[in-house]
Length: 444
Length: 126
Image (cartoon, rainbow over all chains, first blue to last red; front, side, top):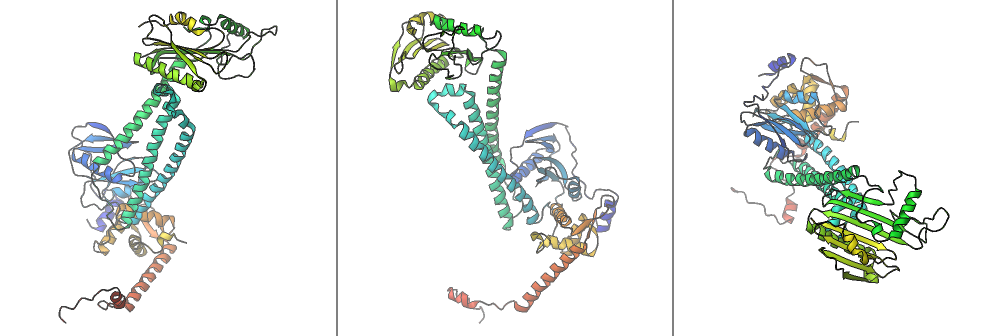
């Protein structure tokens, strides 16, 4: 076709080349994950050409996925044009189509063109034009590295203390703060790795083509595809863990609202009737219907990953100070006539839990014992530990620390999957109530 | 003041301006013309050509004319003509320098070669 004929065709809005038509024999479609990053366009081109050879033509792209239509296997050339602004303009697409390159799809700033005509010119025949486009992507990748590195630093500086495994593995899993921190850290580290790879690859590519090497070198895509699939799978697992964890937490709180009327098997009344009466007095003084959420149950979880039921009750009375010592503290309260409700400091915390398996229950109990003793600096001040002979229990341990008077007392009880932990400070002897408390633990 | 990347012009840029300095042409016509003119030595892919035409338009070196169907012709501006003339003059001076000083077959710099210990090969038929 000579120049005059071409001019005539263009003026009549006729295509100069017979563009690749997607005549599909079966009409079958499939969507595939594109296992390549934006900077791996050479591998993506090889992958698309390979699929076209197997009879799957690219029909469109969105995010990390591409749709294919089953067609007659054919030898196609695919070329990807990185465009910093996203999709190529209609003018640019028309420009390429005049040279025999059909627009096949666009996603993540990559515009895919295909061509069946082996005589059609390459899209880019000079290094400068292509380097310019690649350089734009490289600068974008540099900004991503900096942004993700900053996010990682923020995440690590805020959450690294959560990774003190002193509490034990099960407590780590159970704490959504730890899970969120771990999953976010993995996700951000992956993002940093991908961004650095993008920058390095583009830099190498620009250097390669500036040094006179061919613009398109092709090559096998399989290793890269496997690596990227692994990275994506890891990221997906992290996201699923986050969703499960958050959903789990959200459901427990919305479905099982805790209030002072919520039954808790290990009530303070079983151990210290005077303390229980004082709590009732304070509650009675409060406006009816007002939920003192910092007072009674501070955790009430059901159906978590580890437990089918987990409840915690906490009450504290400080006779000396008005300072709220910690969340859930019952501050110093006086009767309406000004006399103190109690004469001395009291503390009561009870955990009642039904684990999903017996081994989880045993492990959680052991970890909890370690955490409690560590928090009370029992190593420093010493603690007496003894088995309490309670019939029918798998574990029954009593502990007392000597750092302050009256010292902290603990009961760690387990029957099968059921555990109960009492942490008490007051005048009563906790081990004398072991039989009574153990009645809460039903056998499976 | 044109961009640093336009001074000097790259070979594809030079040929695009060479075409438009003669007459108004569309992208496809430029590509075909250059291919014929250089006996297939210089080929302008559509990506390359589009990038060059976009850069030239940004720099007001060329202008896009009214489309005729799907044919979009471009014309060179006065600034573009001036730039092209400067480039032609520069290339002429380069060529003149080479023609004045360079004599094929007359090698210079034998002294540094000798210093470096390079032994000149003996002519086959001395």
